[in-house]
Image (cartoon, rainbow, N blue to C red; front, side, top):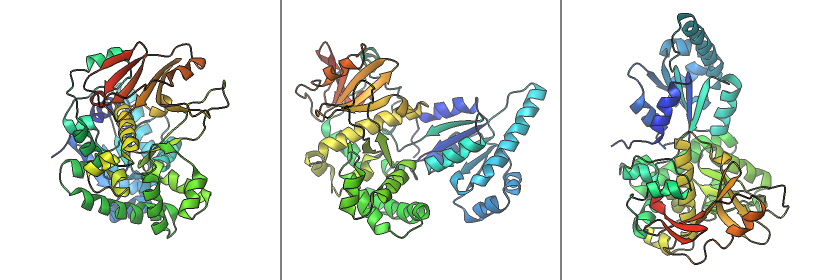
Length: 413
């Protein structure tokens, strides 16, 4: 069973604007499957996971592109970045033909990559101005539920228009959190524990070993388990290094690998020239809560819901859902999403910033949390335009708790 992705419309729109489309994301989130489902029948396909194809691409990139022709979907482009200059030449030649014939330049290449930073570095150097770039993560809650979905904006008027969406109960949400959004689990193709066991072993053996070029796979696995139980916390490299038994430089490299592979997301702190008391460290979130809860060794959703990680992984779920939503519409979350914490321990889980307007967002596991907007007022010194805040929680309906704050059901993300 194929689950339709929200990002499909964005890809089709970009395909009319750019001759090259790049989709980056973690392994097995469905990049290749999705693109093969929506591509035109005349678009060819090749994966560089195939060693024969990869060897040809590396040894003779020009001949490789001649043989597979275009339009062409190339999976895992990071294995043969030397293809990109030749793709650029083809794009420029086809663009010139289109100009001479007064026709539109059609989409020529769709590329996927599992190592975002490496892919983007190579792409930006070779295909600047010719490429549309998108990120894909595991399935969102809306996609699994079969909702068409709309762009999430923390604005009361926008949320009111979505309030007809059926609310979710706590058990249903924690079942979704426990399972995560990997397509093979969501479609019940593979049993959850078997899937994640295989996924981690494959990820470490294939990707991490290649990127690290060292044999510290046991330490890396311990590191992943360590940060899993610290999801939604500030990132402290030296503390992690001390606990794992490696140096801080190694931890920074490992964090970079997980981030570039789409496994984790680093939410940056709000910064302002008005205060030097704001915390500067990013917060770390896993982008798939199923993987996070598996690494944290929770045996079932019931234990997870009442366990020590419940609040943090609920927050992780909400933040990851918002990021998935934004990227599906071609938006860059780093342009709008931040968190706030100062040295007086005043914290706001999320800030959605649009121009000079700050939309404060709190995330709480309960149905009716007490005094959830207590720190919203600290933001007044940074902007004259603090919008009505929201508290994303397990409430059944969108409702005000005072003139400055509304409770928002998690189903409205």
